[in-house]
Image (cartoon, rainbow, N blue to C red; front, side, top):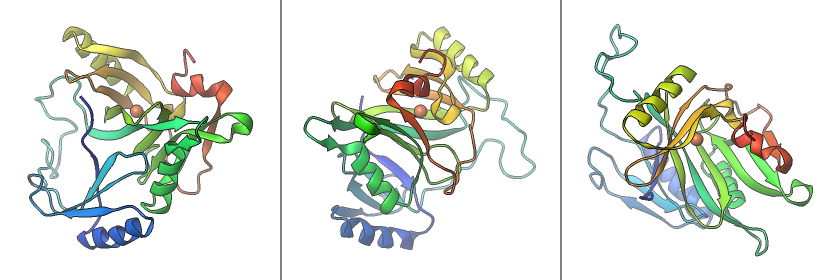
Amino acid sequence: AGLNHVAYKVEKDADLDELQKKIEAWGVKTMLLPEGTLPSTGRMLQFNLPSGHEMRLYAMKEYVGTEVGTNNPDPWPDNIKGAGAHWLDHCLLMCELNPETGVNKVAENTKFVTEVLDFFITEQVVVGPDGSIQAATWLARTTTPHDLAFVGGPRMGLHHIAFFLDSWHDILKSADVMAKTKTRIDVAPTRHGITRGETTYFFDPSGNRNETFAGLGYLAQRDRPVTTWDEAHMGSGIFYHTG
Ligand SMILES: [Fe+2]
C-alpha cells in the first residue's frame, strides 16, 4: 500500500523546462528523469511538494486510445468488466496539519500548486479560531471540481484515488460489484457536499483507499468564487447525508 508519486501531463515538452525554473525559484529541488525511466513515458520533472509527496510532470505518454476509438464511436464498449471506470479522476493527499506546532502542509501545498503550477482552488474547509486554519483544499487545472485535493492529518499519506463513472446508478452498481467480489467497502454509496460528487470509498487489495466518483457538480472556472465549508458544517461537506 501507499503511493510512489502523483503525475500530471503537461501540454508540451518545453513546459517542463519552464516549470523547472519556476519550481526551483520557489526553493524546491527538481530532477529531470530521462525518457524511458517509466515505460511509454517521456522525460519527467520530479520534485516533492511541501508536504513531502513526490510529484512528476511529463509531456509525452504513449497514446493507446479507447476501446471505441475516435471514428464514429459507440457510447461504450461491449466488454466492460467490473465498475467500468472512464478515467482516473483525482487524488486526495493527506498532509501534516498540527496547529499546536504551527505546521500546515495543506496551506503550504495549496500555495505552491496555485502559485507555481497554476492550479486554482474550488473549495476549502477552514477550522480553528475565526476559520484561520485551512484544513483541506480542492484544486483544479481543468473544469472539473477537483483534479487534486489536500486534507490535513497527523502525517503525510494517501487518502484515496478516484475513478470516474457516469452516474449515480453506476456508483450504486460499482458498490454491487464490490459486494459481489467481497471487496472491502469503506463508505457505501452516498454524496459529498464538497464537489457535490456521488461516491463510494473502498479498499483495493494492497490496502489503498479508492473511490468510484460521479457527478461533475459544477463547471469549475477560475473566476468562480471559492466554496468554503466551516468547522460546524464540514461533516456535511464530507458526507452530505450523514454529516
Ligand atoms: Fe475523491
